[in-house]
Length: 125
Image (cartoon, rainbow, N blue to C red):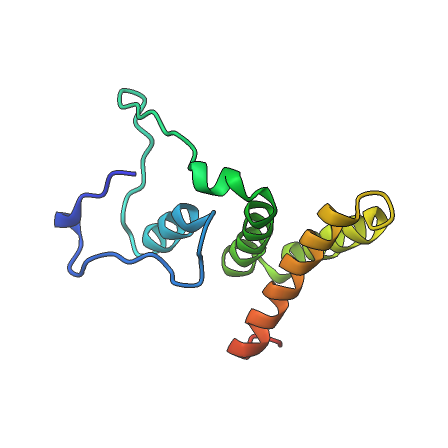
């Protein structure tokens, strides 16, 4: 991501709610709402090597991916989309508990983390 800092009165910030995954999406969505332009340049290319650290712990990678996905839905879609996806992920995880307990429990852990985060912030409307 390239950012033209001259276009901002204050230095743009990433949302601290995100630890990994979807932080760039959230950043772009928030700043486009403020009138900044977001573009994809076909003439610029960057080779991105996935982090060797996240690949060493695929369980945490999955947990943070699901958590951040739900967080992004909450912040950038309507409530019905969030509820639908939250229920779908939960139902699939519960269905897979006897088949693949490890992956299903990681998904449920991410869901629990998301729900706890919302209770701490008082977002339970």
